Image (cartoon, rainbow, N blue to C red):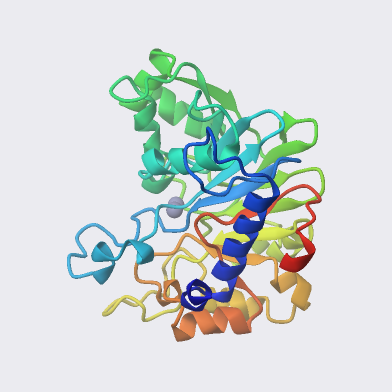
Length: 338
Ligand SMILES: [Zn+2]
Ligand SMILES: [Zn+2]
């Protein structure tokens, strides 16, 4: 089939999985489009964006051919959490691409169109991760008490700085406290737990999230300064990896030299090449949990035909795809799909 030839192996698998889900239970009548929805039996994750805060392509990169090829453009990093049993859906981070991402999440979710989302979990106060909150204000959606889960400094930042403070004052958003290591329960068998990570903290704490469902769990970690800094703080990434089935992690830059004329050694993100090297001694099943996200526009691994992408594949790891669905319950794919 010609489509699969155009897609990476992983994208092809995602496409086929989505197709099988559709065959397993999609209703096209009454649904907004004929797109695949998450399977009905339990909670799932939907990847809504894989780009770094600035998006792909980035503002000002006027010569970037991806402006004219939507299939190679990417939205800012965000994860949807969907529970078809309750019809609810949540987002990790509110990005500048919130308009389209909230639509994609609704289409995947089997839920009602309102509220636009049932809650938003914020990782930190860098531009790609919270500025989508602006769409909840009265210039746009005019949300009513939409739960926004935030760590203490993050919540204080929103409460005390315009224009965000207006969202609080007009009750567009209801700030919900997060504490490191303390799970927020979205259903009896679905929790979201913040984990503090070392990353520039000018305005807020920075957290990753562990999302645990009835049978499977995932880590969402878009930004970290370095794995070794985390070691020094007493958390080994390899230990966290053992506790999850999927780990979506920081892939901002592939390697030093990626940005012409800049020495990138001090850049506050682990290079993908370093992550591959660090995890190379792990068993294959641990490495297979890795899905890279948060790609800077300069990252060559965004191109499925690149040597960088091949290196990720050779390491037994993957690049996350927008639209990719992972179930958090024991979902049996049809036999022909396996
Ligand atoms: Zn970021
Ligand atoms: Zn950041």
